[in-house]
Length: 331
Image 1 (cartoon, rainbow, N blue to C red):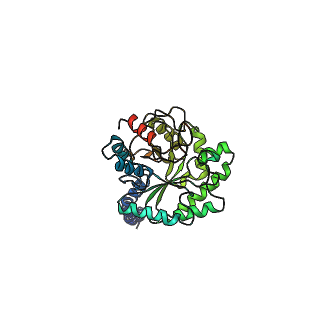
Image 2: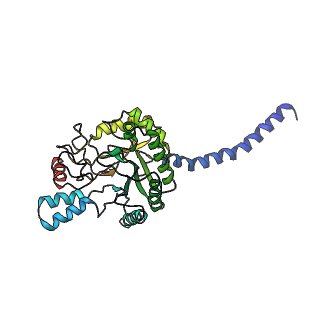
Image 3: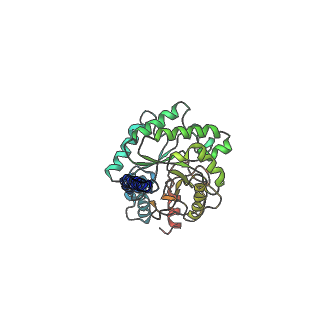
């Protein structure tokens, strides 16, 4: 056979060998494409968030229904209580010896109701840098406590917001390295669980996006779903959307959630029980395929920010303010 025939035979042989490889690649590709798409899909889409029967709002609504069942106050408080809000896990309320069983019981109740619980981990050492929500655990006890919570959520889908204000306040408290290490440890602890985890990024009226993104990147935001903004604050959704998108651009496209519990009228520059505010958008996952995964009521809207503007202690129910927020929102 001449050289032309040899080359032709070799070419046909290569094509014959290549055909099944190409076919195999196309076959694998049909299955690989959805995996890539799923990695960027919203894990909160379609979820019904847990309405805690032991929430401060529900306790207040039950009391009002008992004393004045036909009153406008009872109806308003009942409507607030119907909205799912986050469950704040503080060691003062959920101590080390019971926290695992307590969280497991909440998670089981949520599953039974066909809902997904939202938890806020809030027990970091020197919490709130000595401000109104001061407290937390020791350096030794804190990781053990967090591990107990993670163990309770290992096989139960949940949403976890990890230590509001911890990173943002660290710039003022001078303990950035300590906070970054503590958040990193928390991320590692929750990694084996089914929890969808968000770090806290402060809000649009606090740190600039570059500073917030730097803290998040150092803490390991790339190893969780993303970050939360406006937790326990009042900034309007447009401001938080812009802030979230700016931070996301600096954190490799991290997604975020926004606390809309009290941002119906936006903020006025105050963070502690400002007057004239309103309830915001009800809690639900977004459906637009954007960077914001959900609007959540991370802060129960009737709970005080602290002993300021005539409010009770931080976290205590404040009936008057709850009704004011509802009225301002047209409820």
